[in-house]
Image (cartoon, rainbow, N blue to C red; front, side, top):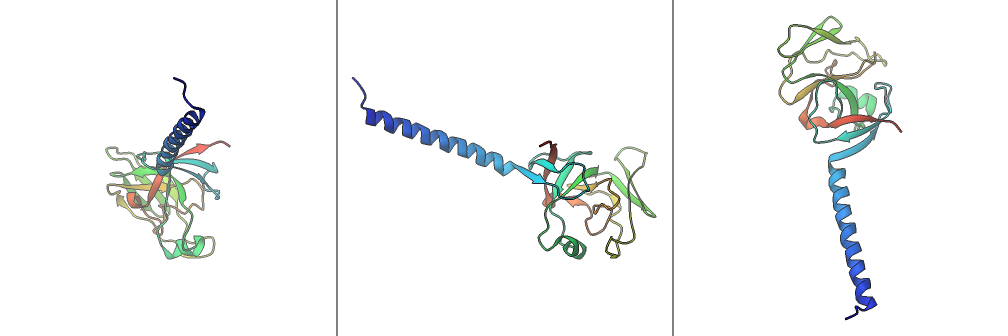
Length: 176
């Protein structure tokens, strides 16, 4: 028995539609857990990043997060600022101390302190900058920063620890 060409066309159209739907579902699921972001500041050495939303952040990872609704953040970046990208310098359970303008971190279970940042008393616009949090980093939170001397990060109260509720994801630098 020979199949009619209209039946074959309908079958091919249905198969194509189902394939497209399957591909769209995969793309949609991938897009839900991944992002592509561009860094427009000089605080990180790279400008393009691929973000994994569900990945656990570890020491040394680059992460992107939603900055807090702090008056200093709003004054410099607006009411709906772009995500901030920073490097994880310490994780939950690690300790942070401020000694003058030096910020030191000690990883949990070690005796050695390492310097991660220097603070400034004033922003580039002359606003007073308050030191960020000290003590043991709480569960689900990170201390983030950059080596940039004008970095606006966990070294200052306006940013503080970055906790899960503000974390967007872990980033990999892209070369484009």
